[in-house]
Image: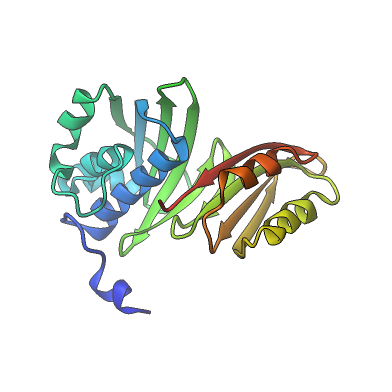
Amino acid sequence: MNLFDIVGPVMVGPSSSHTAGAVKIGNVCNKMMGEPIKSAYIYLHGSFAATGKGHGTDRALIAGLLGMAVDDTEIPNAFSIALSKGMRFTIETIDLGDVHPNSVKIMMIGQSGRELEVVASSIGGGRIEICKLDGNEANFSGENPTLIVRNMDQPGCITEVTSLLGEKGINIATMNLHRKKRGGEAIMVIECDQEVPEEIMEALERLDGIFGVAYFSLR
């Protein structure tokens, strides 16, 4: 345990899990989209659904989707700011099953028409976990630059990706591998120690067996 775990983040309250964590979830979604969000459909689960309104979870999520930081004093005004920027949103409740009680499912449409679906949890002290992206297992913290690589489950694919990152001086902090079935579509979630330049992502997308690359940046 470190000092951050005890005192929590610098934030607009009242709750590190229901407010700061919710802002962080929205902020990760904002960066993953990489463009202004036109529509957001938000589904609150468990404690988020039961007490989220009183803790400002709904406004915190919208604030994050707008790109606000956890200490932004405009978080309480997130609804009106979103509407003024042309972002439409709905907020409902849902049962996501066996997930952390502070969880949410967010379905987004960007200005270009790009769609993204995220399931995420606020796990305490302002920390979060991104559980799923577009229905695929993800499991990353949003604390490091993160590559999400969709690939064919075939020999040599992982080696090619990690070798390319190593050649370019990108160190891997953590790596999680998920697949739905042997020989089918798989996903690599790679948390890195450095930001990954655009040209590396373009090179990854050109590799054989890669379906697509998404990226979460701390910038």
